[in-house]
Length: 145
Image (cartoon, rainbow, N blue to C red; front, top):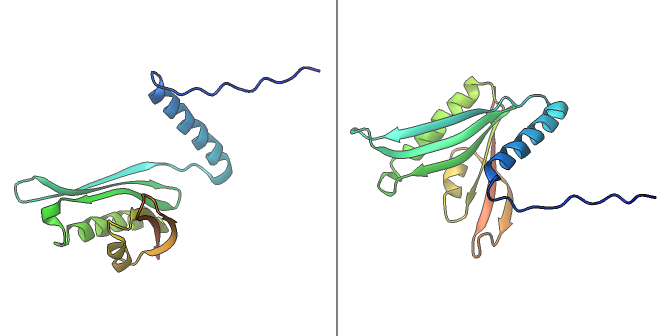
């Protein structure tokens, strides 16, 4: 009886980009068969001052029935001025316009969990002591479409 040889596991350096694209394409194809095409669309917003200088921004992905907020950043001097809330409101407006049903994201305990709670997000999970001495917190906001 022939024995099946296990695939060799390789740490990619030279072809990392191509391998990452292939992994993503393979997973999207698999998921699409089970949950429908995700139709990924990037969302990129910036907040600019009167001189056009960027003081904040948001990146995310619209797919299936959700908006995933990947990153939200506001320059130190512009914090507590409404810039972050403005970026999140615009992201939510665009998610609603795209007929999404929810927004989800994660943050760290030393970043802005209270900010997201004030915007109507609820926590649904936490990884404690990641990074050490802090927590990673996961949030969701259901949208009424």
